[in-house]
Image (cartoon, rainbow, N blue to C red; front, side, top):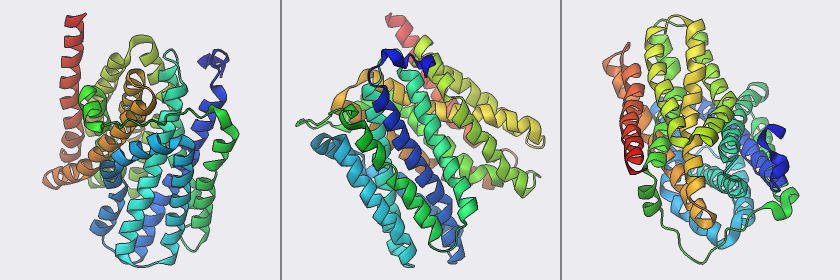
Length: 388
């Protein structure tokens, strides 16, 4: 970890503990997402019902973010994470013991809310302990840990299978591992308790560039992982190749976030966001042009995947540089809420666009939010130069 100058950072053990929380939670989430969808499919439910159920975590993020801040301020990080882990374990294992659809929607909402809350708490923990000189790189590693956790969880499911109690036991084990860093870190968990209330609306309005970036991230990531394989099949790729496209997206998300954070540390978050916008535009165009050339497409999707997560990483960096303590928890909660908004609106927009055009619908729908964001970002950069 020498390349992060951790020797100069007395909070190294606390940061590593928080990153372990993120990775373990990501594994639990990455295993549960496909597992629950496969089980619902085997239970005979339609893809529309499955899609609505899958949207519950995003809905929870939007609706409950103010409560995340409230209880983080009231009880502190350690108690808050502990409570969320326990509730997530109980709700996750409960899926196995019920076949009632309405109960599954309630469980999915609660389970998703708990994992969203752990992410908010972990983001706050890490950002609070990171200094300004290395915050970008640390948040880049945070995003990489999250992505690696997602794909590790999905990989574990290929080993356990979706039948029986085994995948639920394995998923519960990794969720329980989140508790380990809480006790190892001890006094390296920052105290963010506060008697003052932190309203989210002013935070959202004060950092529009970061909040819009989180919306774009939710829009693109959720749309890609739901609809990119379908787009590939409709344009002549086999099912196997179409699904494998997601691996390239995931590798880009996992491998390049440190470098995006390093660019932010050296040149500023706005310039790093501009790089992500350029990659997002070129990636969308490349997906359209090279859809029938998988080798080239894998390379394009690798960098496009980095761009997708880059929006989220840089949103966290901007908020981390601006806020501290309970206000930082509020900023991170707002980012999760904006991610939830993007996750809710993205797939329907992209799906409808694909109905009108198999060849251009996906391309135009993933290009649109990046282009709009690019215009807003350019305006922000121009205004900042005028004021300086």
